[in-house]
Structure formats: structure tokens, C-alpha cells
Length: 124
Image (cartoon, rainbow, N blue to C red; front, top):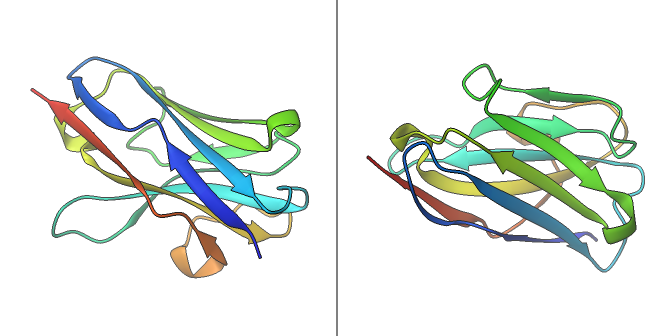
């Protein structure tokens, strides 16, 4: 069982930055792929970015490429989502998720464990 705890959300003006953290409690992220998803009010949860635990391979959705960066810190057992040049349309609850295995995954059903989410609000 992997327990995921997100942090780092908040209110920021358009053009600003936030860094989200996803920490694993109870066990390490070793052998897990980790992803970030987001869900805006009244909309479906959507893929944002994913990274394998080696940190050597990552992939992001087109909507965030060039603005968001996913990374990990093995020593801290934490995955980060650095979000720059934020836009009002980035407003959502952001969730991290973990899936056993090394392959990058972009689909909700591929993930086994989910955090509770952290709210990101971008004002115009």
C-alpha cells in the first residue's frame, strides 16, 4: 500500500509559479511510476505529467509543455510538479498517483494509488 500526500497548492496570480510536492508515506516510490492529474470544477480528471522512478523518463500533456516540469528526489521519496507561467485555466485540484512498474502512464485507470489532492487557484 502506498499513501500519497500532496502539498504546495494555493492561490497565485496569472503568470506566477507554484511547486507541488507528492510524498510517499509507508513505503518508497521504488519501482513505481508517478503521475500528476488535475480536475477542474465540473470537468473530468485529466492527465498532466508522469515520470518513472529513475527520473530519466518523463512526459507531459501538450497543455503544460514548456510551463510545467515533473521531477523526483529519491532521497526524499518525493515527486514534484514545478508550474510556471500559470494561467487561470490551470485552476483545478491537482492529484498525484502511483502505479507499480516502470512504464509511463497517462490514463487514470492505469494508476493504483491516489492522493487526496491539493487546490491550485490562478487568478486573472
